[in-house]
Every structure is written in C-alpha cells, then in structure tokens.
Image (cartoon, rainbow, N blue to C red; front, side, top):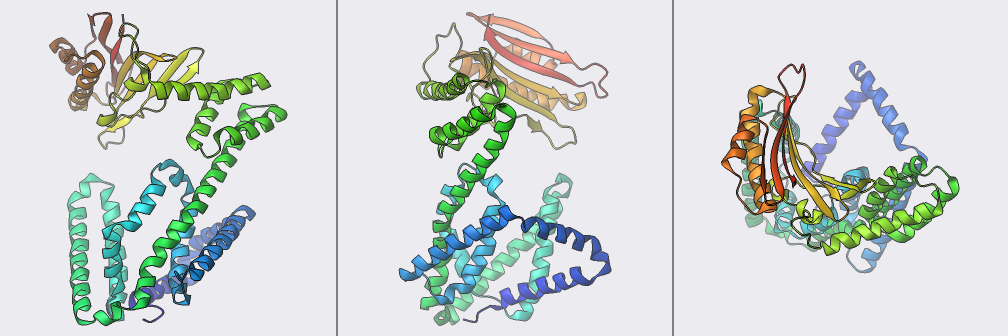
Length: 440
C-alpha cells in the first residue's frame, strides 16, 4: 500500500490550499493574527512540558509494542495520525473528560465494538484521487451545514435532507467496499492490514493511563488554586494539600466534594481542617448505609434525591449548607427551545441523615405557554407523590397545579401543597409554582 492513500492525499491537498489562502490573502489578516496568538499560547512552558511528557510516554509504548511484535516501521503513518487525532486531542479535552465519568470505560469498549471493525474495513479502500478531491469539500460542507441546522428546530427539514445525503454517501461507500473486497481481496488480506487494524486500538489502550494521570494532575492543580481562597493561612493550606493527596488520592469526586464543603466552612485551625476530612468520611458512610428513616420524621435523603432520576432530574449529592441545613438539587431543566424557556428543578431539603422537604419548582417565564409547562409539572408531581407518600395524587392537587392556584392538603403527618408566587411587574406575567411535600 502507498504511504498515503488517495483520501489522505486529497485531505492534505485541501488543507494545504486553505493554509496558503489564510497565510497570503489580505482578507485573512485577522485570522492570521488569531493564529499567531494561538501558537503563542501553545508555546507556553506548561503545554510544551505536557507535550514532551506525552512524546516520551508514547515513545516508550511504541518501543515496547515493537519488542512484542505489535508494531513495525510500516505503522509510522498510522502512529503519527493517531498522535494528532487521538493523543493530542485528548489533552485538549481534559476538562470534558473529567466530567464524563464513563470516558475510560467507553474508550475501551468502543475499540472492541463490531462497528470499529466495519469502520476500519470501509476506510481501507479509498476512491480514485479525483473523486476524493471532490468529495472532501462537499462532505465537509454538508456535515457542517447539518451541524448548524441541528441547532435550530426551524431547520429540521434541511437537516433531514442533509442527513439523507450523508446516509446515501455511506451506502455508496459500503457498496464500493464490498465490490473491492470481492474483486481485490489480495490487497486487503495482507499482514500489514493486521497491523493497520490493531495498532490504533492498542495505542489508545496503552495511552489511557497517561490521560488518567493528566486528569488527576490537572484536577489537583486546580484544587490547590481554589485552596488559596478558602484557606488563608499558608501553613494550613500546605498541610491541606498533603492531607488531600493522602486521603483522596485518585478519588477525584471526593476531592471535589471536600472543596465544596470547605468553601462554606471557615478553616482557620488544624482541628477544623481535620474535621473537614472527617465530615467527608461521615457522609460517605451515611450514603453507603442509606438507613431507613421513620415515615413521621421524613425520608432517607439518599433515596429521596433519586425519586425523579428516571424523569431526567438527577440531583447532586446531599450536602451540608450551613449549621444543620442539608440540601440536594437537580439542575434547572429547560422546557422548550425559546430564548427564555420555562424551566423546572427538583430539590431535597433537610438535616443530617433526614430529608424533611421535597420540592419541585417550575419557573414560567411567559404565561402564554404555561399550560404545557404545568402539564409537565403535574407528571413529575404524580411520580414524586407516589414514591414519597405511596399514594396517587388527588384531583384537588391536580386541579391546583394545572390552574396555577395555591392549595394545601394533609395526609397522616405530611402535607402536600401548591405554592404560587407572581413576579411583580414582569413583562410576560411570569411566576413560579412549587409543589412541596413535607412534614406538618
């Protein structure tokens, strides 16, 4: 096989043409200025150090793979492409990787999927160069337009058309690949093809530990910066860093919870610092035990916070706010795609180990669309009341929710209330409606 196939040559030609245009055209002066700033940012010592570490690490990985006959010189091209497309880009996406709790598992599974094999076979055969030169800009344009159309529901028909074109192209590629496999299987059935198939997934597999260590390093780096604002005394801050590494090590979620906790507490002594770590340990034990709470007292917060998780309202952790006030809340979920959509959230309030109040809050930013938003509130209310009180919602509460009227009723030591608050002088008669289940 040639060092570059026709598809890769076509991409290289178009990238070179665009680069020449950007570097020479007068209209691109501002773009060139931005590129210089981008290059300067990448030449900072911290970034260069990470890239050097990545290069050394991957150099060791490639050497060990070659010693195990899993890599040879014929894989230089694939390795370079992989470094740019996967290795380097992974470093740029560290922040999103931190938020994706399943990133490492999915990275492994994706390399083992049958789809990965199909994608490899399909990409093995390229069209003639003149076809690829035409396809590269056309597919880039169609793909970009489809992404833009996806952002606005008004362009749904356009997106469907563009996606249909991409699907048609995919069918053509599959048909062409099947034809080439039948008529020219000898090109595919070579030893080099095996290396082409296994090297990228193996590089990904062996690279994941490096990505994980970079995630750990950058997380602690950011955490220690935050400590400057929460622990004023240098001595206590230094001790806090040491304790954090020893206590949390690779448990980054616990580190984040500890940082949030001490942001609400004043750490001015070694004893208070120790107590902050004890608090995290105590919370961990409470969550693992999730002990039952007598109905007359309330609910287990570690069960109550998940009452609406299947409805898309997963809360964060049940955390201490102030004194003995504890709280867990979902994010505000938008209902619609308007500029200022109505939104809704679920929260749990209480004390240590006991949830006392369950609340769903709906913000109606425009009363003209309140009916559909109240209907969604009713659906969530039915689920919450069923799970918290083991009963169906009453017709009176239903009517109050749909009408946007305040109401309250009591059941065996618990109350179900609808609270409506009008926003004064709001242009679109905005208001909020809360459904609250609590002790009397």
